Length: 413
Ligand SMILES: [Zn+2]
Image (cartoon, rainbow, N blue to C red; front, side, top):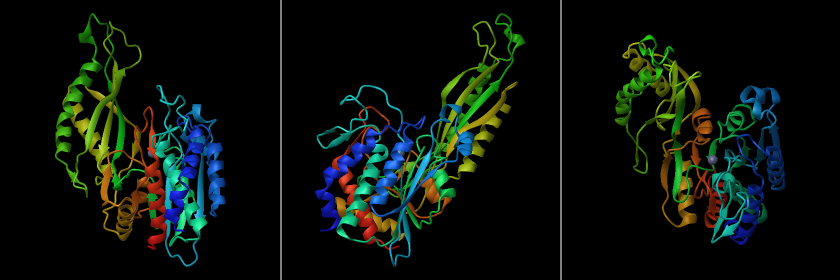
């Protein structure tokens, strides 16, 4: 029997696998049940013949990196390795196992039900991205059961905290774990016919405008931080226009431009009162960095634009703090690795593949930009990521399992 035929026959097992994973609510923040799920994943990888180790994040590092409310929630990453005799190269498959918090009313009651209806499996994490984990484990099971060896050594990592900043997840893995990948598949970012070859990055800043408080009846004695902030926000228009001219054409022909969203969060400082001249005002900036832009240059450019705009406003004093960031990445899909994946996707799905660049970000950049290896994103995906009734298509779960199996058995690097 071929691995693909095995996967078709064991679709029910794939569904059950995903239901088990979805049933463990690994909500982040704060990072619940990581111990439970990583123990189960390590057990599964071991049973599939991989030499597996679970890496707990040292508590000192955990306390340095996470807010106090999360110090009671340990972090783990799982790494499994399959050494293939004679193989020269190593392919690394990565997925995060954490999920975003839940809210709202779900069609099947619990957001962790794993209920299947009309070919869709419902639950938090089905699309993002426990479905990918279930598909990969089923692919490995198919290879083991049919006795078909991969053509490369295989590494598998299941990591924490992608839904926050990945610092203790894939960020930790690429720095500290004994991995030696030549190629990486981060199992999200591309789905269906689309193979992801890069993603946008993001810089999140918070700008504080410092004014001077005064009694509301004598506003001329103060410096109104809100008025300065309003002028500053308008002053950023010039930079926005500059960015709008910067265009990136993706391999599938889509035009992407860098963007700025101002004031996703904004407000007054302490001591705000209707009869007081506001002494401080703050607003956030969400700068989306193109896959091909230089991240540090983008941040610097934004900080300069802020300083220039503030300088033009009399009495406008600002401080700028970075809240968070995520690096972008892009690999031109010219390497044979991408051709092999495109051929595999086309073969399994019986339709041509395309290369996309994701507007959101994921953990691909840790492999592509940091480890500098050809990296692609592909998984079963789904609908309503991060929303109510998140779900994954059973058909796509099966197709992804076949694609992973075929990639491992057709491409030798
Ligand atoms: Zn994800």
